[in-house]
Length: 73
Image (cartoon, rainbow, N blue to C red; front, side, top):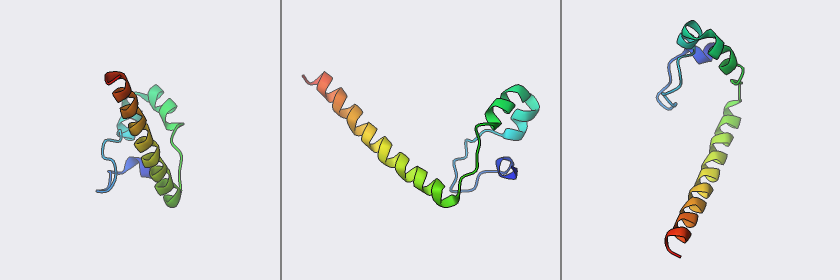
């Protein structure tokens, strides 16, 4: 897929590995990694990130509450 070979856009996460370089320098690792990449519709991608926000917010609250319950018995 050509999308994995382009530079990140301004609104995208820029620390995505360079697939082309990985393929050239470490073909075995590349073959395992590339199998994990799949296309997602733009709207579905947005929905995934919205769900991630909710899940991480809830996890942050739980971890904080657990920490406070241990440090302040």
